[in-house]
Image (cartoon, rainbow, N blue to C red; front, top):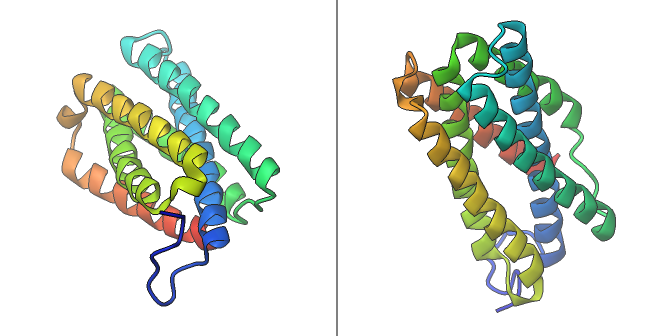
Length: 187
């Protein structure tokens, strides 16, 4: 099957679907980098940079930077414009990361769970929509999806569910992530 071969009325054309995929994924990976940068900054401010949580967050940040580089490269290769909302996501991501880390290590991990669960679902939908003609892009999305699931599992193992107001916190972060995905796909 080719990308966009099965479409409903109003669905984007295949080229637009690929552009949206690259645009939103680049924005999302950049946002993830900024969240981890905010968390790492807050951990430094509070003297917790070398804690177990700090080491885990630093490792996840390295993976997100690699994901971001891959989508930056795809944007140039495919001539895809970035979302106009990148400056907003940069500030919002850093702020989200800093605030959750200031709330504590478990809250920082809860943020990771919320974001990565949302990205897992998002990447699964994208992989299903990309056809054999976009096998390489689909492979990238699937590879990164597995790495995002690893991040979520790491955060859960680190006690994310023990964060104060875990359900409220993760619900709010998931809603914000879904809105950012929707907007970045289009703007």
